[in-house]
Image 1 (cartoon, rainbow, N blue to C red):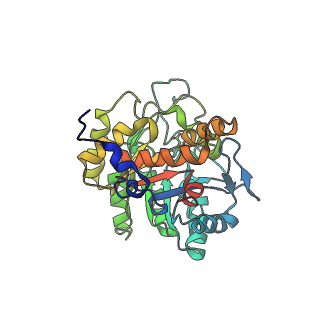
Image 2: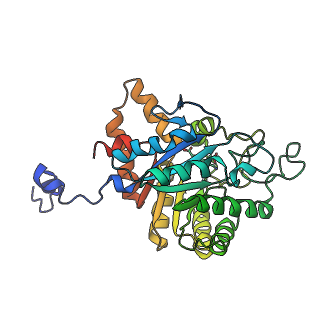
Image 3: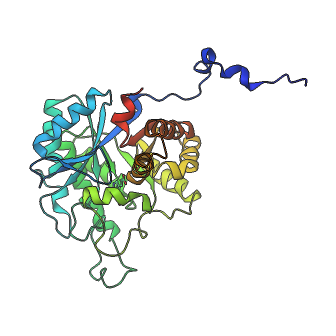
Amino acid sequence: MELTDRPRRLRTDGVRSLVRETSLSAADLIAPVFVDATATERVPIDSMPGHERVPVAEAADRVSEIRETGVEAVMLFGIPESKDPTGSRAYAADGVIQRATRRITAETDAYVIGDVCLCEYTDHGHCGVLEPDAAENPTLTVRNDETLDLLARTAVAQAEAGADMVAPSSMTDGMVAAIREALDDAGFDHVPILSYAAKYESAFYGPFREAADGAPAFGDRRHYQMDPANRREARREAALDVEEGADVLMVKPALPYLDVVGDLRREFDRPIAAYNVSGEYAMLHAAAEKGWLDLESVAIESLQSIKRAGADLIVTYFAEDVAEHL
Ligand code: PBG
């Protein structure tokens, strides 16, 4: 054998870390936090071991725990005290996220990102204002342009409460432009927008919908979220968001969509984020519980793969656990 090229030479213990192409650190990770206006104590989320809904009064403590692991950024999701057809508790000055944000920014140095969507706040569970007959006629769903104003108000309410960044996740056409304009008009031109640019209509969101009580009361979200079969369309979505002023582009879910993460990395000169969603977390936990997988190893391998595909930052329920092992 006359092998001149032997890749194994670079796999010995001493050199392996020198030639490693991607690195994972706590600074790359964003931890989701569920704040529940109806809770008086922390309530564990069964399908997401280690996660819980926390009352507003404990939001800052929860974030401090996360910060102790080295994770500096959190993404806040709210469970409101009441729901209505237009999701008005999303943009109320005293809405759950706004109250939690005020406390967190007063008591910690965390970087606070607000999820901007209406599905947790509407009584029908869709991500915007509905057509009048939507419940009877499944081809009618969310009224796009009427939803824009409510999303813009939500983003401004979050910025007024002290959110460092806003993350619109409703897949409403024009949402980034509407939010950018509203933030600028309200004096928040320094607040960046992390756009869920390519958010798919995915079955991997199951546990989240239980956690945030945001499942649609009827129908599904395929009229506004992307078809999992589509790849080129993600570029179109991202291009629109860049044009509209998005500062960071996110792909969601992460692991089943790494081709899309790679595409956006190569084509757009913006930081790329990926959302390692609730189902991705729950399935590894479930397999680990059965003794079929080693949780810590598969969690790190998953996050490493998301970075290798091209993500700069990752929203993940593994943030705290993995950060402690890095
Ligand atoms: C709100 C929103 C969802 C998730 C994040 N923001 C749910 C959905 O679209 O159904 C899912 C996150 C996860 O599964 O971890 N629109």
